Amino acid sequence: MAYDRSTRNKVRAKYVQGLALATAAEACKVPYNTARNWKRQDGEDGNDWDITRNARRMTKSGIEEMANEVLGELAEQFLATLDAVKKDPKMPADKRADIMVRLMDGYNKAIGAASRAMPNANRLAVAMDVVKFLSVFIAGRYPKLREQFIEVTEAAADDFVREFGRST
Image (cartoon, rainbow, N blue to C red):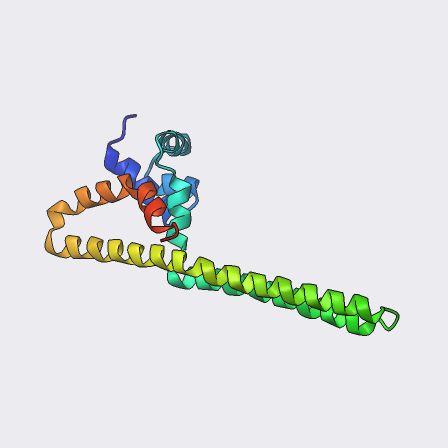
């Protein structure tokens, strides 16, 4: 059975929004294999659904949450290692000092990397917020143009991520 482009776009949109591909296909009454082929074909054409899906996850709160989670895990490991060092009375002082220096260095580098990553993620998140705003605005003021806006937005998705997800 042949499907129109809007059905393909709906499956893609549901997948990008976080649904499993099988669930997105079922919601749009499309066989899973058809959806999988569309995803593969679009990927071969440079329109990678997964890149768009991951970019969508990179909202302001999402990237901060992710960075906080990583730093939290690192802090737990830092404290566990520190506790193990304290509990080992046989460990020589120079080895303790070396471990402490390496722990602090690693933790400081992780914090620095997270803070350097945030501007890029925030730039992408702001750009995505603008696209969301335009989508709502067009739907409210120019509903006849909404389908074209979605089509253009989806076609530009990978270029959008490359442009706004990179360093300035």
